[in-house]
Image (cartoon, rainbow, N blue to C red; front, side, top):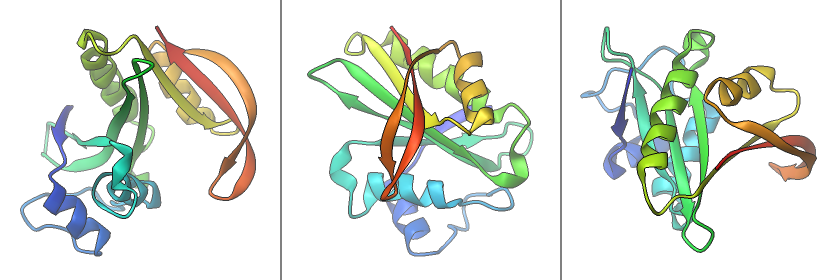
Length: 157
């Protein structure tokens, strides 16, 4: 497993509904979350500072998802998010990618805290965060895609 930075022109192509020919993607990529991540990076919401990387499977070089982070410099807090193509879920890719990204962030002197949020009901995502060393710190109601949802917050200091 390796992480490869997403190039802006590739993100723009994905947002336009095109799969760049020079990149091999796993079946089912991109997910709706993947497109939201590309929008945060290169689309309408690009002012967010989100920095995505493709999650690349070593054995065949296929992109199986993405993981990324944004950094709140004032609070030295990185917020991470990830998505794995449905055809590749349950194989440990998200956990491996989260561990790699968290190790990079922990080595960055500008980062003192790493956080992530997911839906209470998303047991798989919760398990990824726990396996990556994060701990549960809160449960609350939060707006997700225009609807109030129960979410859990994880962090690592």
